[in-house]
Length: 240
Image (cartoon, rainbow, N blue to C red):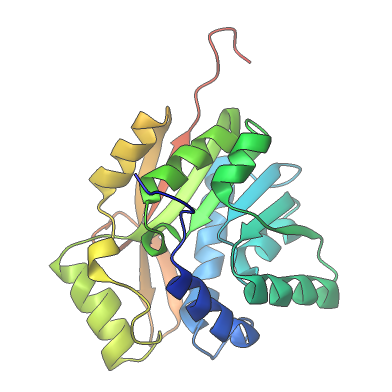
C-alpha cells in the first residue's frame, strides 16, 4: 500500500503544465477529444446520466465532466492538478455548464461522502497514480448501493506498448512523450481483482478503439489496448 498521499507529484506537474491547452481539439489532448463521444455513449448506456448524481475522479480540464453535465447529470468533479482545475472552472463558466469542481483526494472524499453518487467515473487516471488499487477501493465506497463505477485505462502487454506508447507518443506524436509508463499500465484481470476486493461486481469490459487518422473512436470487444470497465455496487440485503 502507498504511504502518504496517493499521488505522483511529477504527474501533477506534467498535467498542470499542459492545462492551458486542455480544450484545444488539435493539441496534445486531441485523443481525449476524439475519444470523448464514445466514452460518453458507453457510460450513458451502462449507467444513465440524466438526473443522476455523478462524480468524475481525475477530471483534468473537464472534458468528460462537462459532457456528462450536458447530458443532464449533476456532476461533481475532482482532481489534484490545480491549474487543470482552474481551466476546467473557467471553461464551464464560458460555456454555461454547471460542474462542481473540487481539489480533493478521492480517498478523502470517500471518507466524508461515502455512498453519495449514482455513478462514479475514473477515466485515464488509474495508470498515473502510485496505488491504483486504493483508488478503486475509494471509487467503490463513493458509489451508492446499486450504483455504478466506470473506469478506463490501458492494458499491459506488448500490443499496448507498441500502439499506446511507441506509436501514440513517439511515432505519431499524438501524446507528449512520457505520458504513459509501461510498468503502470493495468491488465483487466488486475482492475477486476481490485474491484472485487472492494465489493464491486463486474458489469462488463469493453475495448475502446481509436483511429487517429480518421479521428474516430468506437467501443468494441477488443480489450487488448484501451478498455473500459463497468462495475456495480450491490444493493444491501434489504434492497437499499
